[in-house]
Image 1 (cartoon, one colour):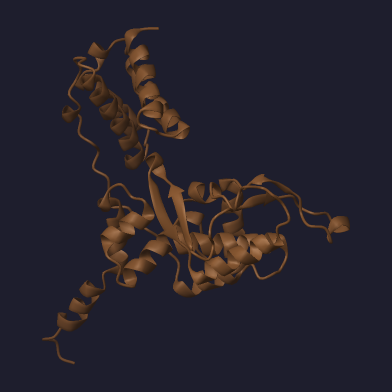
Image 2: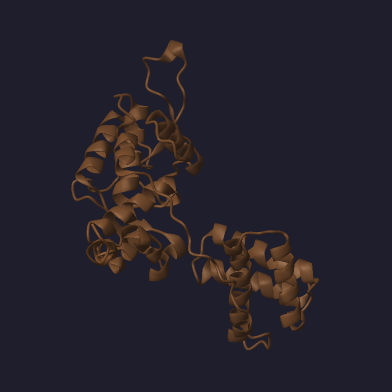
Length: 303
């Protein structure tokens, strides 16, 4: 193992143990950094030069990789260099590596009437429909990421309506359940006759011969199952746009801001580390600008 490989493994261990990053984060950083090291055939920290970084960035750009994806590679490299500097290892200064300029993200949401139809789409009393109704209401009520929703456990005070969630980077935050989501969760759990810890579970499909039996629970639900479920009910509700679980997170944030919530509070509820991430929603919700336009635009024109 050459020196840079040893430093890389030390850094990945540091992320996992000392920084408490998830295994997925570790895997992503390993992917980004190995791509750079392999491309530049870098064997030692001294070979990480400005020229090597420029050539790698040109390589990424010519592969037509999205700008935001390119930034992940550069952020990983900058953080790796910062780690090495903290260990008193002489390397290229991360300040000499500029991040790519990324266009403002375009958030796509559905109309409120479409949202109501989506939330009402699971309208049966069987366990699967009750579960799906509870998932949709919880996503809209809390703004949870799909992975956070899958990680929820069932044993909490539903009437209190507060759930402690561990989000990105292991950060804890509190999210809140609406009255509709609390009712949906209670209806769903009252139908459950198992001791599974997970709040939302995967269910087997019953054959017609076993239609009177409850579906068998096969463990905690996975993100892919929720994605398929949201897509199914959005089509059932007749929504022309493609709807993802993350769409409900966008709608949660937009709904709060339209209602008058301040940006910092929404940032906290979403679990964003930086308020600039939350600001992507403001162009959808800035009532004040609309009122200014309506009050002052075109006043000199003949009516």
